[in-house]
Amino acid sequence: MPQPDPAAVDSVTPSPHPALRADLLTSGEVKPAKDGGVKAAKEQFFYGGQAVIEGVMMRGKSHYAVAIRLPTTKEIVVDRGELKAPIYTNPAWKLPFIRGLALIGEQLHLGMKSLIWSANMNAGAHDVQIGKREITGSVAVAGVFALALFIGLPLLLASVAVHRSGSFAFVLVEGLIRVGLVLGYLAAISLLPDVRRVFQYHGAEHKTINAFESNWALDVPSVRRASTLHPRCGTGFLLVVFDPLHGTASLQPHRSDRPPAGARNAEVHHA
Image (tube, rainbow, N blue to C red):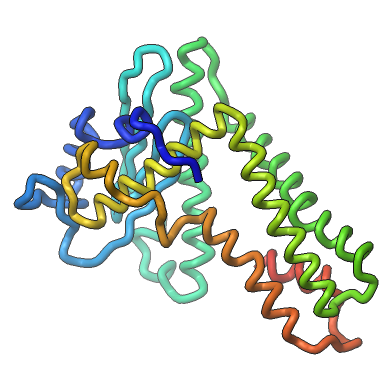
């Protein structure tokens, strides 16, 4: 992951734009700390977020905020709101198994909402507005492309290289091809300036949340010294999950009454 540049770090920290810091304090998410920073509430809570176009979104226990830098004036603008989805208010949605699927759905919704807002704020400088239909269509096309590239193509290439479906060699080759495609794809798109900029904000988001959860002062010097690595990173989770699934399957003996590797793979990814 590319290191965030100072401009990216500066644009997502509340120090140069007090509104975001004030919103965190007044919403009850945090309280002032003795060292001048912010301190989390007594109950342990893990914050989330994502990179958007020229900025980041951060999600707390009851509120979220998106901060972006406008391309023309370089001004930092903030959009904030209350989390009202049932997963945050109804205990039934926090039961095991249910809460995982519900959280994924809510994160996709909140992430899409934040992305559309950041896209429209950036496009507004050119008198262009991007609607939900356009964004949804782009995501749908990207999803089909991802399924074909990262699931269909590895299965096809592995079946050509190894004729015995479900064998240790087949699963190993399929997994190596898939991981190679993911890493190669990330490396290739990082060469595009706009995508590289989003990656930089991704690192800046990790730094900001790490500093925030460490009770450091939310200013540029504190955020700069925080790590870009984050244990709850969704991208890192995908890379970790890809091959352990195949490694586990490769240890299981092949039986003729079991469905082919492609069917098992589809079931795993569908779950």
